[in-house]
Length: 331
Ligand code: SF4
Image (cartoon, rainbow, N blue to C red; front, top):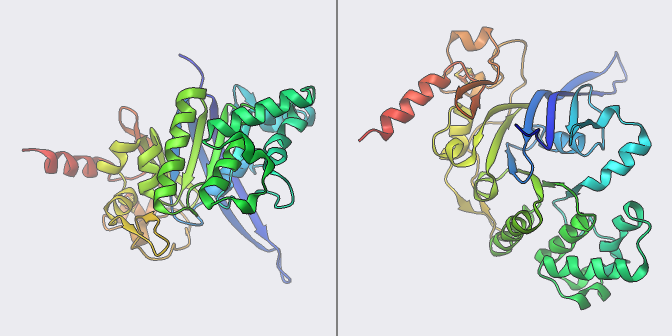
């Protein structure tokens, strides 16, 4: 059996907000999260704003330090590496952000923006080798060689996101973390960029951790998915299985929400559920919003466990959810 490219183990991140009086308030943004991604896979993370998705992205990118837990990339524990080795390792994982304009320096030409990570990661390349790599990269994301001479403001939102993707891929990383990478784009451009990411996986073997609040977008690109709620994974499995036959009540609420088009022409599945409540002590963190909650849910916190082969859920009633699904599918 081959080892996963990314192996996240028991990752926890607490933040303490400073207080004028007393010791401050502690917030657990990520709670004992464990997951793996195989090389060449697209793993989608979906959940509401504030569920810990971006904290996970920052920890996987080694842009922050966990309170406890480990991130193993290609078998090496990122947080145990000496700084010099971590700098070398960074060429293998890159990030694409939500706002393509904000992530591109408006004063620099596109060629320079795309080439910049190579100056740091591959300093021995000559000028003409760098130029060749930039042109090749621009063409692989559907842009032209002469676009290298232009500035970011001369491009549309979709083209700017292609530039950001070219910049992320120029060092030929093994893993790309895409955090809400298509959320700022309208529907037709979203579809083009998603197709581009699938092509890049196919042709270059890139592995993606694709993070979005939008279930429809994750459903359209991911092989496997993890549903996050208040810092924890509450369900994982193949994307189509999780969305078609969820085993956790929260996944079901997300999946049942009607897909729609928002005022910016972007596809979305609005989440018609109340604002997140505080986790409280003990019990299931979702219980205040759960239509299936029972007494046990108040006392005992459900752990993520295998319900079916390849499918895990953190719910005391996952087997009941499974029975209901099987009954409704029966002829
Ligand atoms: S453990 Fe209980 S409260 Fe939590 S999701 Fe399952 S049924 Fe709902």
